[in-house]
Length: 218
Image (cartoon, rainbow, N blue to C red; front, side, top):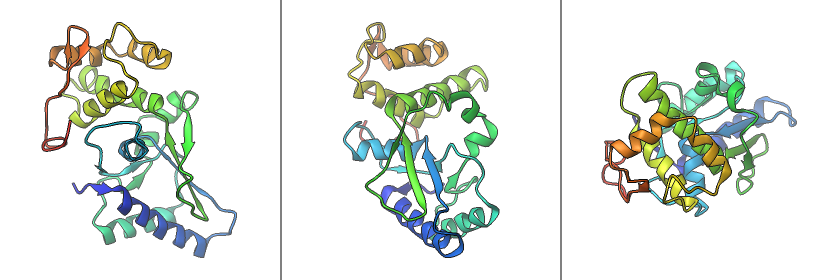
């Protein structure tokens, strides 16, 4: 699947905003609440994380359903830029199928991307601690529920966030949010250890590479 960089995502959002401005009232606001790769890209742009996060397949938004005509416009814009994946470049797939909104909405801290000013779209992104909760959950679910390897991009993202908080020893964590989160996902923690991403309890400098991360700076 094609991956999209930040600038292209913004261009597509600008086109979507133009459509909304032309077809809806001035007070209609479409919310984008990014919880995945796009949010990671924003944090990297802001200098809050390191790692190979330049592109993402889509913008996962933890929001209710958009009107049908807006969904159709999202698809049209995605086709124009060659950016559609199975669920569309802007989608609320996780809200629909995983019920993450019901499980996690209370715990997520949102930040507004106020560097992008659009008349009818507000862009919010999850803070790093909230993103870590999603990433470690995704890793654990793949291992415990699907009995398969986690997506290496999720692994790289999770480790990038740990490093951002200066966590180099999983037994000594001062960040209470991350410390609290880790205790609920032992399969993910064990995966780090079993695959030599953690030496003893220390985070290693590298992670196994896949097609998602091969050739990227670790």
